[in-house]
Length: 87
Image 1 (tube, rainbow, N blue to C red):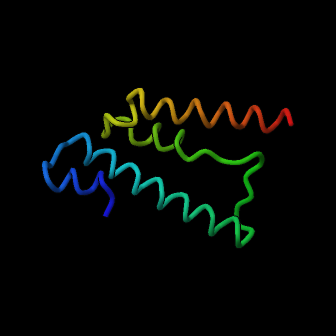
Image 2 (image 1 turned 180 degrees about the vertical axis):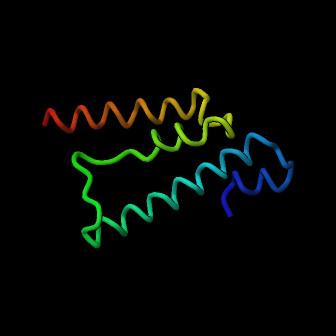
């Protein structure tokens, strides 16, 4: 169990529940995409950032994906992708 999970169980803080929910959905989606890539069912060009589609789909229900912390994840991934195309 992670520290975040223990904190949620100890206090039931809503922001932690949202974050854990989004992380679980993100990991599940990533696992499906990796499986599809391994089976040659999906081969994204230049990588694929699951955070963008998650934000688009989950924003109405989860404040976490509308926040600055999640936005920073999107910006970091975009910067890495741009750097990767320059190398």
